[in-house]
Length: 254
Ligand code: NDP
Image 1 (cartoon, rainbow, N blue to C red):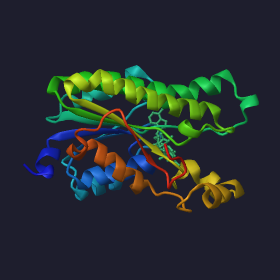
Image 2 (image 1 turned 90 degrees about the vertical axis):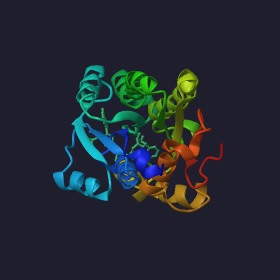
Image 3 (image 1 turned 180 degrees about the vertical axis):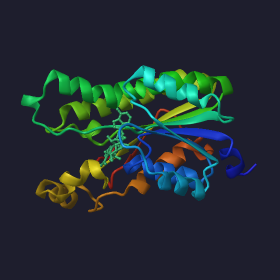
Image 4 (image 1 turned 45 degrees about the vertical axis):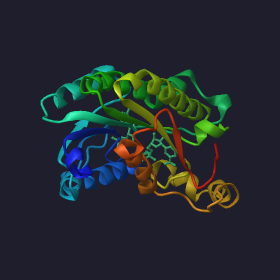
């Protein structure tokens, strides 16, 4: 059985899958023939984008508005997928937000809001999706962390904490899922060119980071993160679980 034959029976959910890194992941998985469920939050994708993904090779495409930090919203989206003929094989917990603000002025509300999306959202999605995978006895979850979660940071302490939590969540869920052949891994990108990092990349601090701290001396592209995610979803990584794959040009070597 070729990968394409297997993939076109497998549904992968990508949260935040219609722009930035999530869209690059969706494009890559579409080319590999998976059926895709792409969840956006506020920005409904253009029909032309969905048509493009289908024409790339996606076996099927479902698109829904989901707030990953709201359990009821995730339950509703998963219920809608039950009618599809595809087994949920993969989950990419990619949805996330970044806020840069000095630690001294961070409010409780800002802390909770960011942690709710970046960390609790991954917990909720995994907790609801794993029983569907368990039913089939096979699955792969990839959580998107960040080098910020490995290095810490002064301007986004809550973000760093959320992304460190994503690494611990991945290791724990790898243990929870192992008996049912559900693998759980993490990808930790460094500085990747998306809307989220536009400001940082064009700032003098960003230029200095690229020149001084990133051994490969360039920012990364979303498709370079997608390559790592698609590897961890695929059977080529069948003996890999509980790991963090750094895609960061050498910014952090863990
Ligand atoms: P973008 O800001 O470009 O995209 C963020 C995505 O998350 C959007 O699709 C957005 O949906 C979605 N999203 C935000 N809040 C929610 C929510 N409550 N529920 C569901 N979806 C939501 O970011 P990137 O593509 O750059 O980042 C993707 C992931 O990669 C994030 O987890 C980020 O922390 C991580 N990362 C990024 C790095 C970078 O350098 N860019 C570095 C390290 C990690 P909508 O379009 O509807 O708003």
